[in-house]
Length: 426
Image 1 (cartoon, rainbow, N blue to C red):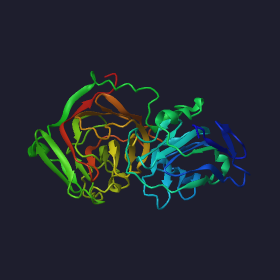
Image 2 (image 1 turned 60 degrees about the vertical axis):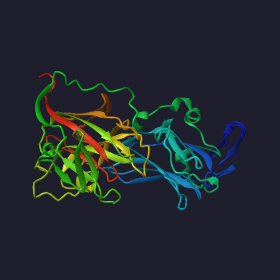
Image 3 (image 1 turned 90 degrees about the vertical axis):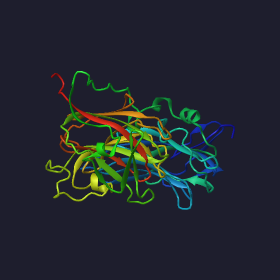
Image 4 (image 1 turned 180 degrees about the vertical axis):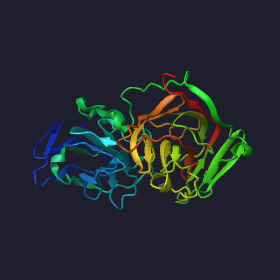
């Protein structure tokens, strides 16, 4: 095609490169591709929203089908109380990983340019919104066999999708960005973990208070009082505590390791960690307490066994931040996420804290300055969020801190310490 793309628009003919194709009648938005798409392909479309979408306890469940490629895949947008997400789902029989990106909101009315591109033989598949990658560049997937696709359908009401382009080749990041209309490049990038400007780190130099708790996490004695929930294992060697799971392949192999102390609404928690396994997911829970402020180990609260819903939809309230995420079903995740529980509300995101494949020792600092929360990894801010106390219920105060790992994860921790934080101006 000499780099030319087939461009298809509902009730319009648009020209790009060598030829143009009409989508046909408004009530019949199926479009036949000038060339079949199979092992390599690129599909792009422009979505115009007429309203804003966001997570929250009052949000309705909404599913908007955007695009269908019969026999190959479909793309949709979903809103729920807990999350908004953009999904590319391969059809049954296509043995490849889809792509789901979770975001806290989708502002509107607004315009978004969406592009998906793949090379099945090379194990490459990613997407972009306004040129922002939806999977970390360089993520490799197992190769797969792609069926042949010959047409696309604008699912639902065609008015939501104003442009579709199709071509039988894979586009690298540079060429994918070139396809984005200039006025949309980078637009709304903050939805996908890209800070519009790097947040300033919370100044703790003059506000750091007394040492509330410290453990080197290097010997069994240093773990005294810590509580393991789930099938977690700990081993102390070479100055580290290594945490893993007794059931690394089971659906109930997740674990949470709780520090015994309860910390106030303002604190600075610091520790070092190193990911040992290739895949996994690491989370820090904090401000964890019962619904009436009870200690999380109060025997009247429901039992917890490491299963995620026990912490996100169960009998405790807390915040949690996922700062390393590279699971087998979702490799190359582009964000660190902060959620508020009970409710599992995705309230904000930022760039990945620890990149897949990193075996470096990382320094983490979690600052809770009342309703202002910041997570830093190696002095780089990856989460910066302020709880307004309204959107997802009252801001959380004092509570416990826990280290969570999903079942595949093996990671090491050391030198955990927590200081109080004086209020600003004191």
